[in-house]
Amino acid sequence: MAGFPTNSLRLAAVISGKIIILAFGYGFLEAVLHFEYLAPPNQVGNLWRLYPEELTMVVTLIATVLSVATTISVKEALRHRMRHPISLVQLSTGISLSQGSHIMRPGYLRLTLLTLVVYGALKLLTAGWTIILTPTYFLWPIQLNRSELDMSGSAFSTLLHNELLVKWGTQVQGNSFEVIDIGSMLSGVAAAGYTFGVPGIFNFNGAKYNTSTQGIVPTIEEYSGSNGVPNVNGTRLGFCGGNVTVSTIAIPPKHAHVSAPQGFGTNYSMWQQGLTADVVCGPINSSQPQYVWDTSNSSIICTLATQEYVTILDASGNGSSSGSGFLPSVICPGPMTINQTYTSFLIFTQGFDKYNFLNASVCEVIPKLTTVNVNYSNNLISSVSTSPIPFQSENVQLLSFIAGVAKYQVINSQGLVSSTIGDTLYSTYTSMTNGSINGTIDQTDVYLELEEYWCGVVEFSATFLRSGFVAVGSFPDGIPNNLSSQVNGTMYISTIGWTMRSPTYLVAILPLTILTILIFTCALYSTVQAWKHCNQKLTFDASNTLHLIMAAAGSPSLELAGFNRRGILANEGV
Image (tube, rainbow, N blue to C red; front, side, top):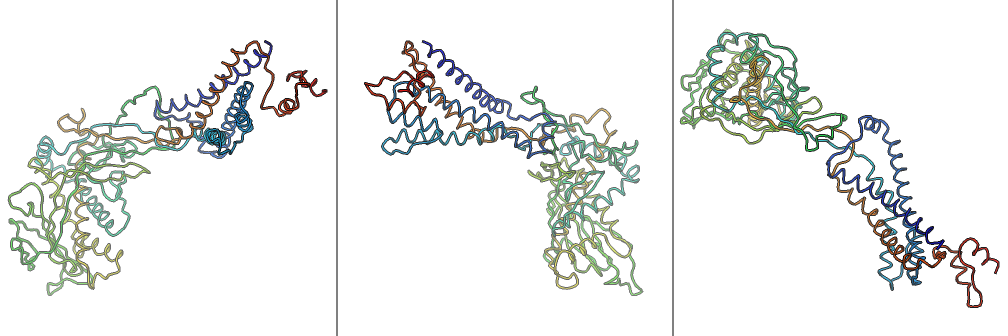
């Protein structure tokens, strides 16, 4: 009876230790699966970022300790199994496994495969624990929503119409005209340059846009730009810079008691309402008799639309083809299809003197409301437009404003001796192509450049308009419900930790699972046998080489004294 309690205690210790290790491994993975994301405290995260090699070594040491503890548990469980009746082949298998080896006997395929699986699991233990315990870099998502100005409905059209009647000819004549002039020009230049591979960063109201605005305003506080407070006449159509209203809020997560980490940085992906334009430019030719370009006084007849310019000519009435340039443009507020009066407008252009590379041309500008995927990262706003929707009848006031901005741009771009639009086409084309502007020029490239320029102008006009109406003070009580639309998105926090999106965790836990099954099977068998033979004193250990040698040397005439400490000493003297 003396041997039974000792063996039982050792077996109980093995099982208890294995349960603790198993509970730790599976409990940790269960927490990751339940909470989806886990991150260490901010101090630990910062330490990991500063000392990744040192902390990786610490994690590896912990993984090694857990692996060694599991290996010892496996060996102890096998020893207990081999204390009871067992075949020689099974004995050989148990000895190999307890020594961290395997057998290769084709005649005993099941035992061979068993030893190979257990051997592989033992070798992969440290790697598995290291994978489970080592945090990795990932993005912790937090859902956001807010409301912004809805420019698509009839409510905004009515508001804009009233603002145009009251302020367009009075208060708007201040600094806002300069903002429209310079801002639309710079936006067009950035968009046109991007056509030829020039990286364009457009700045407006303190916010940095990648190439163009796509007709949006920032919805994230740290990207919103200026913190200035507009004066009493500095909002809506009188906007000339200032803080725009930002009210983005985080949606409470499913596990609200798990707080998001501070992380190493944040970026945002938002879905917002935007505005862009499909612009198609091409030459005016004899097949289009509805357009009449009068080169004697540089005007075009399109529903009685004309535009006057002041420029410098010589005594003969000619400009200089090398020193000066004349690029007149006329805005015709109507589409090519006479039946539709609210979907697009036309821009007619022709270059003279140093801009004579641009023949008489017409651009149809078709503004469209869009859904924009906006990415806020690295202090830059990048946008991609999707789901374009053409203007409808309720957008006629918005179309009128955009056409007005384009008209203001063409008037102010032409100076006495040069045109900003013409210089943009000239410089961008010559700097990014191998061709000469004075030689054979690819009109297709020039038209493409012109299309992008006007697209940039249209997108800026929407951003200017939206900024003015959401600026601080525009709506003291907040944007009315009939003028607002929902904005949704996600904030991503860059941090380290553990996430359920990593399938390697399931692979890493497999060796621990295999060895746990082996240990429990051996322990269960040993426990059952111990109860069956509780009156027997079991001191023989088949995994002990000395015990095997003594047992092999025994015979009917040579009785051994047992295999405890006294028995071994007595056996040695025989």
